[in-house]
Length: 264
Image 1 (cartoon, one colour):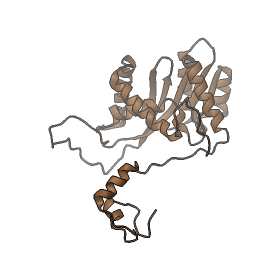
Image 2: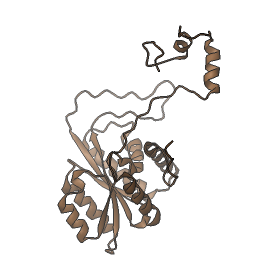
Image 3: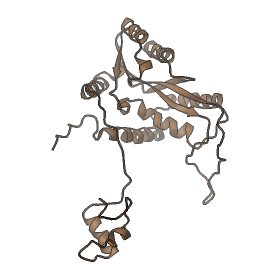
Image 4: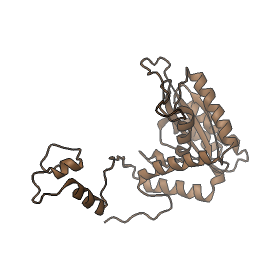
């Protein structure tokens, strides 16, 4: 709503100074009226609606499997691109004297991708840093998941519909090894449970960092994974997971298990 003025960013002052108002209202009274009507100054949020015709069926299947058989459910996704650059973060420092990190103008190390696997039942996270996203790298990750359940009973792997995750070779291997791929909807990769695990990874390993090269970053990632799997119920890790879970699930405009809102 522009009210005939050339603004997209309206402060209380510009609202109060609108010449088209029939009754003059001071800024403080206008602020009180906005507060009374539960209107606050908020940052705009965006979302991308899935156009997948099977969106609801895929989401319902993921929710059903993660609820009824979590010990047979795994999640896989690629995290990245990972580049060698200074990453802002938070840390302890003397007051008014935060850590200062030099800016990065030249990035000559390229990018990498962390291929992560997550066991819902065991609450364990593992993965390998790769140079590219490829079908061979995806297949290697799926084989590591199959090894985690060597009983040949069915396992369910939640992953997105990236082309390298659904090649004929991968589908044949999955059929032979009793692995069922549960694909998330188009533009709905947030439905993958591993997304909540990538949040702490980004916060505790990438945030406030200045890694000199990719091998060092890969070692730091593996060190964190060893610590995280040995301390899966650590309160700080759980808090970071909950925060990330709330963020990614908010894109669906509802929480899992809640009844879908009826169209008005």
